[in-house]
Amino acid sequence: MNGGNNVWEGDDAMSEFSATRLGPAERRLLLELARQSIITASENKPLPSVDIDEMPPCLKEYRACFVTLHKDGMLRGCTGVLVARSPLVFEVIQTAAQTALQDPRFLPVMPGEADSLDIEISVLTPTQPLILPDPEELPHLIRPGIDGVTLSKNARRATFLPQVWERVPDPVIFLNMLCRKMGFPPNEWRFPGMSAEVYQVEQFSDQGPGQK
Image (cartoon, rainbow, N blue to C red; front, top):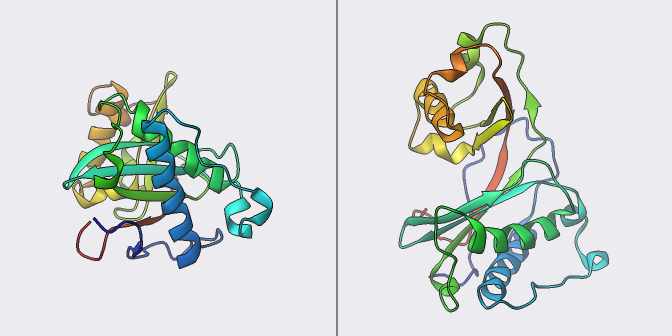
């Protein structure tokens, strides 16, 4: 475990990423705050507090994010928001605690477990709706390895981060799995009534190169 001192910066596939990029110091600070948040949340203590006036400008921006946890190479939790509710620094603190305690797929992180977790943060661009005159065109409108995808229908909503493309590179299979995540049949995206949005992420973790 690296303790958060070395920040891994993944390959950047988003040439049109227009939002403010985070420098190494800002990434490192967010990872440190995320780990502190996980530790205090698991111990039922108050989350870290920061003085927003002392934060770098890019951490004051309203940006949505996801926090993903891994343990021994296995997923340990992943939650986030698609629409920012507060400045990025606060979103990361809250989302890290939420991931540690409230991902329904996993037991809450236990006190003392945080030091064994690898933390990954994904900072999102604003979502962009896709125009779908023919639902069958959807696989051709999303970009493998680049776009996160959100599908919505009948009050159900689910998203896959761009990282999912690493294990599901086929757009049709990707969409089928996302429909199942929503609780629909795999091919539900082929029928009218489904809306789709895309976004990109700035992804970084406290793992070294080659360990992700």
